[in-house]
Each structure stands twice: as structure tokens, then as C-alpha cells.
Length: 396
Ligand code: ADP
Image 1 (tube, protein in one colour):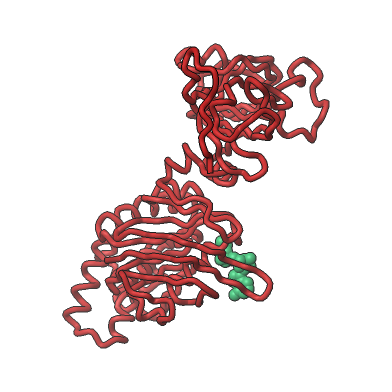
Image 2: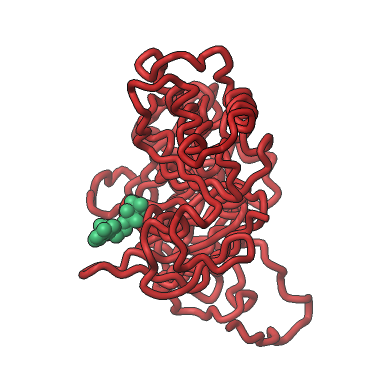
């Protein structure tokens, strides 16, 4: 049973808290990815699970056993790192079986495990090659096979694809998914690449500054980000944000307004600072928004830079008064910029006045101060006709 539980794990170094009060419950057979910007504490978290570093406080349980103080070899884990250290003078068979031979496993058992592992990572027929006769991807597969033969309860992988070129990385992503399906073993995977996290994982744990921000299936993090950090980190290109203030009938930002009944949002009242978030694919040219059930009112904008990607066009827009001809009045005002993605056959050029609408069902609201998500739609239930007051609900 490859369950892994972190309970309040904190790791402090002399002048930095690398991981703070991290609690995770990872199920048997789950593929969980720790993702976040460089320096956020992903590797340190993984190292505490591996036993390569001891937490300052908190506990770690693997397969129901408290392993907090156990050495790595007694934890039932196998690690694959970014820097693959293969023995250059040994062939593939010897590299894969090295750990087993060290532990005096019987030859038939070693052969059985090596055969199965090489089959899984598709290295059959290459057992006699030396590392310098292999491609980067093949060497990485040897490293993975070496972990597989240990038959661990849990695989720990720290950026194992980081040194591969872009094309091979994408290919190895599908290989790792296949591997996971085949082995049916828990995998905890570290990457700073949110696309890698999104494509492979059952759940992703988004970390910032040593703290867990959200752990959820990739699409939940994408569609219902818990806070501004997750909203901005997950998704490429990033979500658009516009800081504003709640009015009696919606949110006013310096460049556009959206309407809703603030009384319907628990704990929100006029004067409060909220930040609106909308993904580029949820911004539409008004003339292309016919299929939207709930568009916002039109927002005037001016097209700036166009980036044709082949399957879509990214359109950078300037909103608000800049659209009236007073371009560039405040170059530092980043909220005047909005990114939209449109169909590749859209007839559009730069410096054109356009009307935009947002999909109200996919507009997010965040508390500007705490960053916490307040709503993932503007289409929350409207007041019952004739209702005179909104029932006040406790919001915390
Ligand atoms: P990530 O894997 O997300 O890039 P790390 O877990 O490697 O981040 O590092 C988290 C923080 O802890 C960073 O600020 C890093 O500098 C610090 N750190 C990591 N290892 C050590 C160490 N051995 N000594 C001191 N600080 C460290």
C-alpha cells in the first residue's frame, strides 16, 4: 500500500523556512505532482519523504508506517533525479541491476526484475549497451528501470525530464503516464513546469514559498483555483487580472466594470477590494460571442500585438480610456492590458477598436487582500423575486 501522509512537515534551514506546515494525504497508486516556482520548497518536500533530509517538525507516514526517522533505504521508496548518474563503464543490464546485486539478490530474481523493467521502459535489446551508446531519453529510461527493479511502494521523481530537449520531454510525459498505468504504484513527481504537472497527474499540489496553496485534480486547479497564486501559476498563457472595488451593483475596475448582485456573495459588501480574473479563452470579441449564454456587457478595447500560434491567435488588448484614442496614457498601468485567444481564422489586425465580452460563467473573483477565491462565476443564484433581504450566511 503506497499511501504517503505528511502531517505538518516543516523544514527550516539557518535563515530560511524551505517548507512550512505541509500536510498531504497521497493515496495508494496516485500520481501526485508537486509544482511551483523555483525555490518554493518542492525538492525539500520530496527529500523529507525520501529521508534525504529530516524535517524540523512534523511526521511522515509511508504505507501506514511512521518513517520520519528512518533512513532512505528502509522507507520502501525509489528515487529518480534530474541528473542521471549511470556508471559509464557498466552496460545497461549492470546499471539497472546494480542495487539488487549489491543486496545479493539471487540471479534468477535479478533477471526476472530486469526483464520486466526493461520491457516497461522499452529498452529491450539494449542491455549490453554502455551509457555513451544511448540517447538522453534512453539514459533516463535506464534510470527509471533502475528504480523499477527495486519494486518500491512509492516512486519519488525530482524533475526527471528537466535535462531533456523539449520534444523528448513531451514524449517522456506520455511514457511516464504509461509507466504509471502499468506499475500502478504511487508516484510523487516534482516539476516547476505547470504543463508537465497538468498533463500527467491525478492531482497536483501547488506550492508557493514553502506553503501548500491547493491540492486537487489539474482541471479543478485550472477551473477553480483556490487563490490568486494558483490562478496565476496554472495555465499558459496566464489568467488576466484586474483589481477593482465592489459597488452596489458589481465590480468597478479602472478599465471596465462587471455587473452582479454583491448581496449574493457571502461576506462581500460595497467598498471591498476584489480582483477579477479571466482566462484568455474566456474573453471574446462581441461578434464571436453568439454562443455564450451569459456574456458581460461590452468592454471597449483596442488591439495591440497579435501572436498567431497556428491553432489560435493570442491578441494583446488595451482596455478602458486607452481605446478612445488616448493610447499609452499610463504605460505602467498593467491592468489596462488584457490577453484574449481567438480562432486562427479571425480577421483582426493591430491598432483596431473592438468590443469585448467576458463569459460571466467563467469570471473569477478573488479577495485582493488575502488572495483567496471568492467566486468562480458571476452567475451565482440571483435573489428570489420579491425577496426583501438576503439571508446572511456565516462565511467562515
Ligand atoms: P524548489 O525545489 O522548489 O526549487 P527547494 O526545496 O530546493 O526549492 O528550496 C526551497 C528553499 O530552501 C530555497 O530558498 C532554498 O534556497 C532553500 N534550501 C534548500 N536546501 C537548502 C540547504 N541545504 N541549506 C539551506 N537552504 C536550503
